[in-house]
Amino acid sequence: MFFAGYYYCYIRRAYFSQSIGSCPATISYKKWNNLNGPVFTIDKNRVSLIRYENGTQDAFTPATADISVVEPLSSQDLFILGKTDASKHYRKYKGAGAGTLITGLASPVLGLIPAVITSSTAPKHSNLNYPNEELMQKADYYEGYTKKAKKIKQGKVWMNWGIAFGVNLVAAIVIATGQ
Image 1 (cartoon, rainbow, N blue to C red):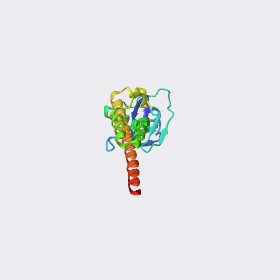
Image 2 (cartoon, one colour; image 1 turned 30 degrees about the vertical axis):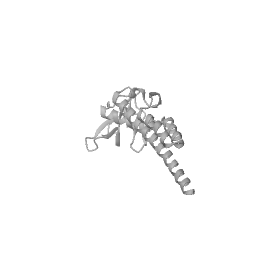
Image 3 (tube, rainbow, N blue to C red; image 1 turned 180 degrees about the vertical axis):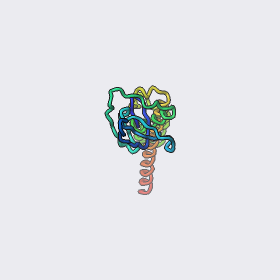
Image 4 (cartoon, rainbow, N blue to C red; image 1 turned 90 degrees about the horizontal axis):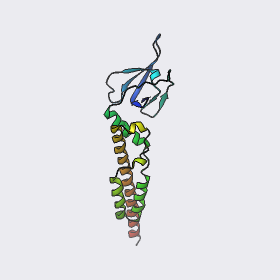
């Protein structure tokens, strides 16, 4: 991922070339969504960070204080970036999940009530924990982030209801076979 200003460009591989004569060092890369496409090259001093698919990263100190925009992301790229960031940063589903688990432990049928209610509502804006305010103001990024956050919340809520149901089922079996 290149970071320059507030624009990102995901890459899966980066190749560094040495300075040849008076040419500045460059970074060659392919766009993540077109790995069979053309190779793009950018001056190394225009890049402050590359984050690789496996989570490692290389940071650079730009030669000048002016960091130029590498490339604005398309609507699809913003949507995907929103989903990726939600996977990394959205963690405030715990209240909905815990409420479902506790109620479900008391009664799996009663546990369905908070499970259905909390999984059908989108996370509150204050709970989203998004990493960048400017990106969140872009409609496509916002849509990707909030859709993924809701999906994460739904998964955790229903997982907790399933745990409560399983505990109740095992308890009922133990009680029934113990008599």
